[in-house]
Structures are given as C-alpha cells and as structure tokens.
Amino acid sequence: MNFGAKSKDLLVELKRSDWLPPYNEDGVRGVLAEIQALYDELTDTLGGRTTSDIPDPVKVSLVVHHQALLRNKRCLLTYLKWRADRITQLRWETGPVVPQELQQSLSAREMELFNTYDRILTNFTQGLNLDLTADLQPPKELHVEVRVLSDCGEIMTDHGSVKLDRGTTHLLRRSDVEHLVRQGLLQELENEST
Amino acid sequence: MEDEIASEAGPQDKRHASGWNTLALSVAGLSRPFFAFGLSRTLWRNEVSAPELLKVDEHLVSDLIQQVENQQEIVDDARASPEEAFSASLYQMELDRLRYSLSKYLRTRLRKVERDALHVLATVDGEMQGRLSDREREHAKGYVDMLEDHFTRTCLSQMPSNFRSLTNTSQEENMVQEPNLDTFVVCRARDDVGLVQIGEAAGREESSMDLRQGDMFIVRYRPIRTLVLGGRVDLI
Image (tube, rainbow over all chains, first blue to last red; front, side, top):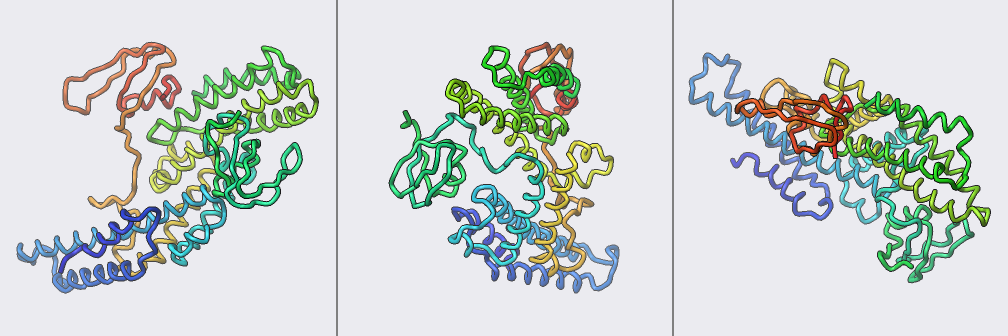
C-alpha cells in the first residue's frame, strides 16, 4: 500500500488549478478510508498491549502507520483550508454572491462556508462606518476612465445619471464605479485619461 | 505608540473644537487631512510589516473614521458651490487616501486575525487577546467556529475519535499556526534608543546595535519587538 498517495493527489490538484478544482468528493472519501484502514491496522497490531510488551520490529511498523495517518490528516486539512482560504478571499473580491461559473467548483458545504463568512464579515463591518471591501487599491486619481465590457444599465452619480452601454468609455468618479470594475463589468483604462 | 498618538491627537482635537472644521482654503486648513493621513499611514505601515498583530487603538481608529465622515459632508456641500468646487476636489483626494489607508489598516489586521485566530484565542495570559478590539475578537471566534464546523462536518467527524482535534499541540504535531517572529523587518528609530541586543540566538558572540533617532536597520523582528510595541521604533 502506498501511504499518502491519495492525499498527495488532492494537493497536486490544487496546485495545478488556476483558482480551485471542483471539490473532489471521491478523493476525500478515499483518504478518509485510508485513515480508517491505518487506524484499524494500528489497533490490531497493538492488540491492547502496552508499549513495553511490544518487540522493537513491531514498534517500527506502529510508528510508520501512525505517521502515515497523521500525514493523511494533515494533507486533508490542508486541502480544505486552502480551499476555504480561496473561498473567503472570493468574498472580498466579488461581494456577497458567488459568481455562477465558480459555483460548480464548490461543494454544498463550501457554499455554506461562504455564506457563513459573509455573515461574520458583515457583522464585523456593521457599525464601522467604513466599507472595508471598497478601496482595495490605493487611489491615484479622483476620476478613472473606464470601458464598459457588458451593459450595466444606468448608474447615478453626483452629476446625474450615466448610461453604461457596452463598448462606450466614460470618465467617472472612482468611488462610483469601483464595485463594477471589481465585478469585471467595466475595464479600467490606465494612463489614457486626460 | 500610545503616548505618541495621544500627544498628536491633542492639538487635533483642539482644532476640531475651535470650529476649524469648515472648508476654508488656507495653508493651515490643508494641513489637517495630510496630518491625519500621516498618522494613519504610520499605523498601517507598522501593521503591514509586523509579523504579529500589534495593539489596536480603537478610539483613534473610530475617531479617524468619524472625522472622515464629517469631512466628507463638508466636501460634499462645497462641491455644489462653484467657487469652492476646485478646492473640494483636492480635499476629496486626501479623503480618499485617508479612507484607503484606514481600510487597508483594518483589512490587514483582519487578515492577521484570521491567520492567527487559533493562536490568539489559545493564549491564556490575555496579553495577545488584549491587542484585539472587541469587534476583532468576536470575528476571530466566529471565524474559528466557522472553520471548525466546516472541517468537522467534512472530514474530522469521520476520523478515529482520538485524531479529531484541530488544536493538538501536545506532540510534534502542532496544528496551530503561529506568527514567525524571526522574520526580517526594516525598521526606523523614532528616538534615541541606545544599545539593542541582537543575534544572541545565533550562538555567536552577542552583538548589539546602537539605535539613534532616524537610523534604519534590517533586523529580525524578535529583538526589536518590545520597541515596536512601545512605539519607539517604526517598521517600514
């Protein structure tokens, strides 16, 4: 038996993916089964004896099994934590809703995780009088020039309403359009402004 | 740092009280947003560079947020009148900068709170916990609960019962991540600190550096930790 190969595969999957690979339910179940098998082997070998009764060669095998078990656990938690970190990061980038195309990569539990994080983050920012998710980049200019990548309808600014049709460019207050840029509906044009 | 902040916050409050808070374009008038910006920049620069969470000054932060709000109202009013519109846009830029540095500061802290949540909540002496604001402490608890719940339901509950713990620190299997205090930081002294012992851990002869006001050094964080916490040294 090749200990830890399954859990390694899970981590390699993460590494090869741009954002997150689809949640690997089978892989996780496989690792859990391996952990259980290792544990059974351990308890069988131990057979209720105390360590002093066990001959040294058996002790070695116990250590190997125990370490393999711990390693599997660690890899599995790393897999979940890495995913959880990406998911919570997503809340900062795209706001309180998971974009449609990313939803299929998440398990039902991970969607729950996202919603829970959304709730505790909202809890944190409430009453703070400061929108932490805005101003992710240091401001350079008061206005930015943006190109509309897909129709956003009309937005209200201080100087009246602006209709954002696809393909048009506008010079607007950064604070008015920042959230749209982050959602990828607008593109910021650099160094082309007046 | 508290002393420094207290002494800096003093005159600010006075100006506030003397009705300074109107949008008159004078040289003295302009200094205020710059001033607040410098203060908040020191705050977040320290926080960004330090490997561990620093102590938060809740009053200062909420005070700054409050002032940003007040100022924003004034600038909004001023933008309507043609003769003040130009200066209003200058103020607006300063306000945006200030708002950025404040939210950057709070965001950085929040990320560190999440990263070190288990470590912070596990420390018993309360010193670490005292560095968090109530809000952050609540967030740390919520975050840990969320992850624990997630891990338990996804995999830990299906493991053998004596392998279910997330916070097992007893043996070599330490599952709690701690900040790395031995990382290198760039620091600048605020005043004459004198001799600081460094490098005793390296097993070599004890070396020390003479830290004078304005001196810059690249050192490990651990030897200057108390100086940073005491506000005598800034991180860059």
